[in-house]
Image (cartoon, rainbow, N blue to C red; front, side, top):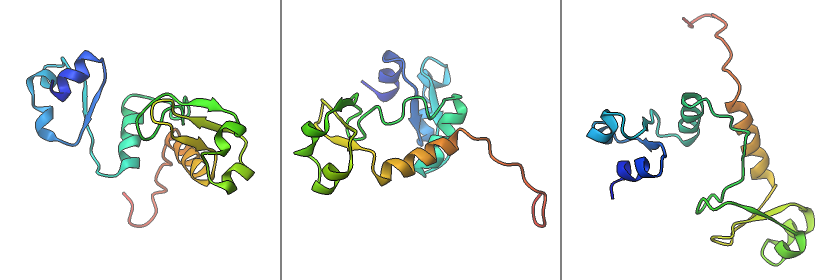
Length: 135
């Protein structure tokens, strides 16, 4: 089964950088929803998706596994302590685990950086000041 057929069957949006896919009959006719991503950069792609589909990036962050897309479940610090680094076990109190692949997640420095970046996606870009060199 092709990507566009699968996207249509699962009622998903096909995100692609491949201009050729966008010319396929299923997509060009509107049978399959697809978005051509303008950038090679992940954060710019995410911003395009958020703006195109008017999404709230703060709606359900960190609810899916980054490795396999499984739905994360909360676990106790006792359950997580055997699977996370000792410093993490000693300093963190909230954990989630992916039941599909077994990965553990916690609110460390990466979580804080990504949270701030996601929050900035929901903000409109400031207008140009019209200073020298700007049009």
